[in-house]
Image 1 (cartoon, rainbow, N blue to C red):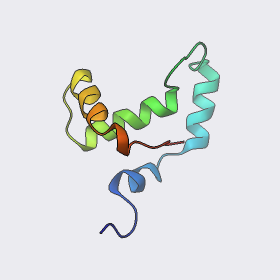
Image 2 (image 1 turned 30 degrees about the vertical axis):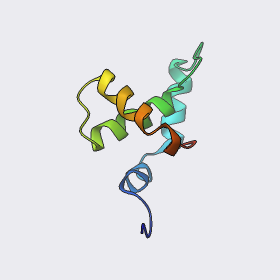
Image 3 (image 1 turned 180 degrees about the vertical axis):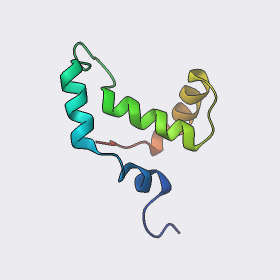
Image 4 (image 1 turned 60 degrees about the vertical axis):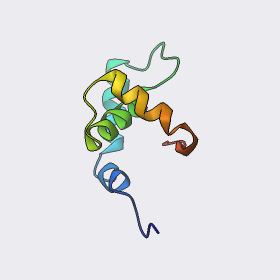
Length: 74
């Protein structure tokens, strides 16, 4: 039984989201984005590093295999 926060949630607590948002706005990086905005893409890349994924295809296969367990990260 999981008691407390996951490792991923603990790592995400250290991200300065206000600064991250300001950088995204300054560079207009979310302009024209359809599926994953910059913050979501960052979360996916951090998650993939934590579970030792080696390629985008590997990340996609892992996420699709656990699709029922995915939830909104926002």
